[in-house]
Length: 269
Picture 1 (tube, rainbow, N blue to C red):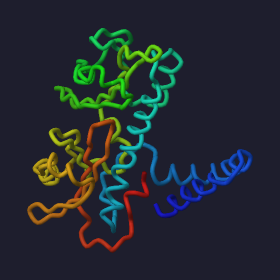
Picture 2 (cartoon, helix red, strand yellow):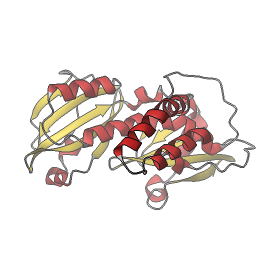
Picture 3 (tube, helix red, strand yellow):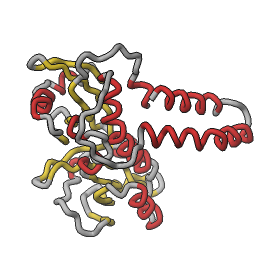
């Protein structure tokens, strides 16, 4: 991980050099190396490994578990938030090609009339009403999100305002099942994902799941974005990440007899 961060930091520093020509040469020289470390350390190929890994740092363990889940969700959020007009077919096709784990796309007026839905039939009942309930507040162009708990599992929704000129006329919304993203984690069973009110992913460790669920997250997240807690003599580590205005908590059991580490979550973002 340290080598990856060093490459990213070097790329960012070189990007500050004057002149587009220098920047182009720098990007060409570092693209291959950066891509190598990115694929090797963060955006690994989807796989599920049920054998416990030999982590020596709790921070490194949590980072390796959650980053491959969190990163694609946030890149989708960025792509959505950049679109503020009625999307054309090319944009829609590109979105689904870039994010094949996405369940669907809905474009609706503020009063709830659907003007576009892809695919035309959803596997789960659609519930984007909480997003449209923001109404004229969507004019601030901030991304909104919510989780709908269905009999078929949780569905995460994100929305951005849709404009005609400067007039807010509706919302562009995407939705996905976060369990599709857990396939990117090297050991999804060791990870628990919750909001202040809901459990999005319980993992395979029942004790960890119960311990994480029992925390007063609404109170904790009012003042903290990461930390540790102990339950029944076992320590856990957690980190909060925003998806739009939705707070997602990623947690896992801490590494026993862990080694001292200078690892920082802030190097991931």
